[in-house]
Image 1: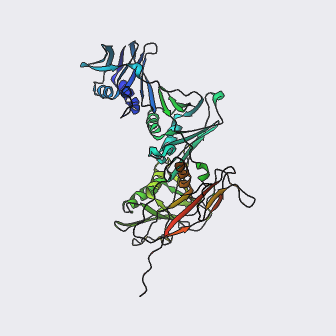
Image 2: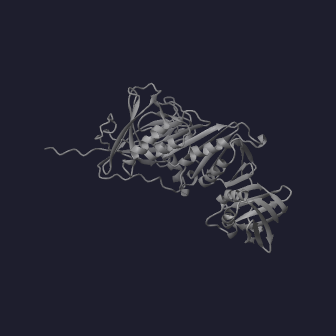
Image 3: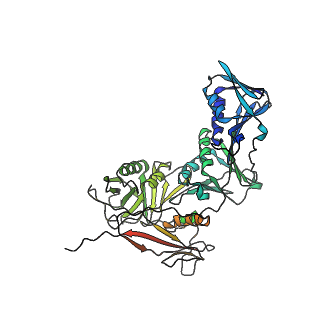
Length: 500
């Protein structure tokens, strides 16, 4: 094998495929990059594989003699990056790869390319999406996926592909992010199915996001699915990944479709205010109380910390709902800030009902249909009062929520929120309609419980008297689904002063 290639082209290609080089390989050969030179096509093909994600990249160059070798990936990448920015000649001599450049040469030991595993193929179903839309879908959902790989399907993004549309969703049990769009072409129509559902690991999509950011906006990505594998084909680049096993939570039923309150706010203004009040917020819980006021067309954000201090700020809003009542609601600052940070437009629309039901945030405009569902936190009665700009106002946020879940076989004796088949007296809703805010975590916890995992731990209350209160809500679900959920929400009552 003998090739001649510009130093920058080889360095960039090695950097691209290095994403799939494992830090702790199962076999020594996986430390290597498979290096194939093709004289007929006048190109080299570099491949790396960690048995979960594989990357294959092509690069045009002058090929004098074809051949295949395996070289230490990280060593080769570091070496090529340090060479002069001129042409490099690579040839094989006595089981060594000799890299000649303008000021000298160096040798690297080669390994048997026959030991390098082949990347799996997937040809059952083919979908074609614009690379720009797939990139934005990843940016819109990856932040909400769980980083804990023990949570199985939650440690990834769930994709649904239909004949004419697609959808991507991610949740870690505290928030939900969804992006969707249409499919203009479905590749091989004979292989297209009515609905394909797959969950792709977070790590794979993180690397794919980097790759999509480096390709042109006008390129397309062909997605092949089959045999527990998904393959993303881009111009000169192929990314192969395993598919996560397990059933993803039925998230469409968690998204409300009707709202009492709707507000348009400037995304950057709200995000900057959240950052400022977050500096003095309670460091452990990071809760902000927000009052949306129709009469003054403003939202007042308030936070209080016994150890640090407090802050109150107001921003302008544009209300679009019919309600004239003020809405008092609490949020975890991090989750609300994340939702704003990954929406692509200057303005966002906040949809809400009650202070204990899911809040939906959507962009005003954009190339995709996007939404982020954020679970509010429980506020005390004092916090639900009108928030003034008096800096001495104190809030006492309550973030602890206990979610008890019972399946059909093991109901829990308490007031229950039941999801049953509709009767004549009940209003039938579809999978797209609303459930209560705590059912987001409950739905996720059901999947986790089925996998032998525990629900996420709740924050511990400090120096307070707890009084458990139970709320009963009955909502009809899909006629084919019947699940019983028991939900308890803990509230606080302030200590009363002793009578004189």
